[in-house]
Image 1 (cartoon, one colour):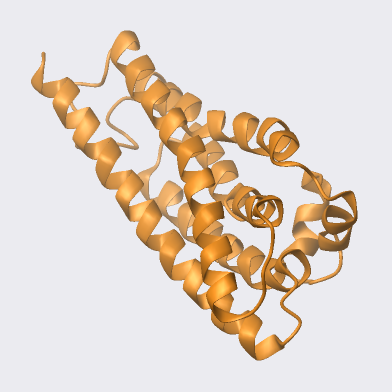
Image 2 (spheres, rainbow, N blue to C red):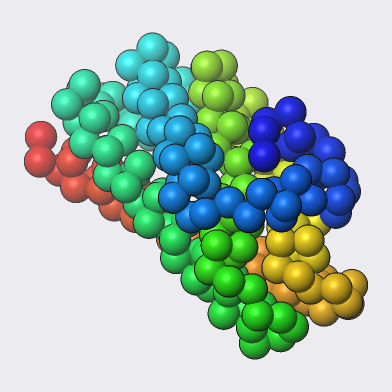
Length: 198
């Protein structure tokens, strides 16, 4: 999978997805090629926004975090993101097995690694010092993530029945939203704890 394939993967169950399926990427390959580099974007962009235009994107974070504090938050956030991809892969496998097919962990991990790509890329919007712009880009990224889940269930998890694929995709989306909310709450608690140590 390359980022140039991503637009087609948003609207097709074949373009890009078949390439991923034919490659049978191992968990380690997806981790190093997709998850790790893209998971670095949100913490790096968060640190940039915090230092380059403090209070404009995160108006409640005053005074802004210092460099050491931003590095701690970013490091924890990065680790949690990577761990969450593994957790989502296992949940995707369990959901699919309970409803339709029996994918391997590598196939589930591929979907768990590809689906959040729009959310990771959306962090680049932090270059723009506007809360509303970032919220709009985040909303569009969620639409992209849901589209990737919907179009990836069939080819990657081998769910051939479209009705079952739709049901699997709905459950995966709900679990993904819950996981994302949990991630945001965890990061808010970590930032609050750091601010409390000042």
